[in-house]
Amino acid sequence: MPDKTPDTGHDHQPTREELLRHQTPPGLKRWGLIALAAALIIAVVGIGVRLWNSYGTAQWTEEQAIQTVQIVKLQPEKEGGVLNLPGDIQAFTAAPIYAQVSGYVKKWYVDIGTPVKQGQLLAELDTPDLAGQVQQARANLINAQAAQRLSAATAGRWETLFAQGAVSRQDKETRDADLDAKNAAVEAARANLYSLTSQAGFRRLVAPFDGVVTSRAVDVGALVTVGTGAGAAPLFTVSDLTRLRIYVRVPQNYSTYIRPGMTINFSVPQHPGRVFTAILGASSGAVASASGTVLAQFVIDNAEGALQPGGYAEVKFPLPAGADGLRVPATALMFRAEGMQVATVDAQSRVRLKTITIARDLGDAVDVGSGITDKDRIIDNPSDSFRDGDEVRVAGK
Image (tube, rainbow, N blue to C red):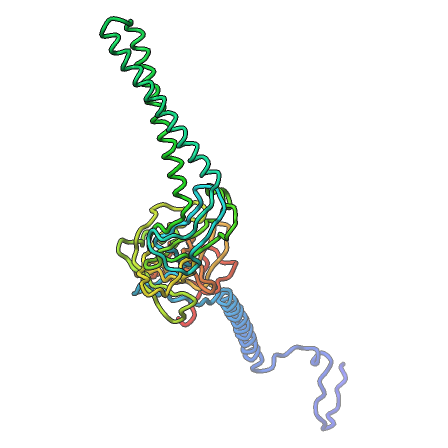
């Protein structure tokens, strides 16, 4: 019979079995579901934030990889420019005077800077050898004339005898042939004398035209010889300074702008600030292979004598609008294996490399003859890594 625990009047104490028996507290399941949902929401939000940040970082990195470039604005020239070229001033007419006979300078009459008239005596030469040759030529002529007279008399007598039948025709023809030979000898002697006396006239050096003596290379007693041998200096130079020529060598790519009647302005060092004008006289019409230039000759009136031959002139060669092409700063140039190039930006903000030809190099800029137009957007200071099709961002756009 089981023992009965007496009721002592105290609270009931749970047994071991009661303590081990699981009982779910009221509302615990509901709170667990809430916690699980919150954890899932936090996880999803966290992953979403990380993905968004990762996408933003990738987009920022991609945007930073696109280079921002500056664009050079090209303006086509509305007015023509000028091409600075060196000019060589020369007398319109200049005559170097050399000796045509050998001898010694007997006397000279004019010095450099002396105005002279045509035919004016410049110097005299003493030519003893030539004088002896003239005397001998005169003697030879007299001798030939004497022989000719004798032969003519003999031929006349034989002509009479032949008419009388006293001599044969052969003898008569022999005397006629001798007369012809003596006549020829006289002509030869006369021609030789004329030649020598003409040379004797060259003992006097005279001015060929009105002008100024611009050089003198003789002195009394100096021996002068015939000819203009290598390195031989002229005895005198007479120049007409009332008109001058200016020779300008125009580069081949600008030679098409040489037009009949065109004028140029130029200046010279001895007249700072003064501008002279000359008109085109002639053009060679051919390119010198050594320099790649076309020689143009301009003429100027120098009646007042302000300019001197042999001087240097800085010539302003006029060019029509657009002749220089487009001017591009040197900072936009790219040196590539394909040649000189520039980087341009197309409508899709993509790089397009264009090969150009340079018409003129100005140092900090170049004039581009071909390869681009004024509508091209050229990149200033392009990166060496640029390739065709690279995407770029234009600054300020």
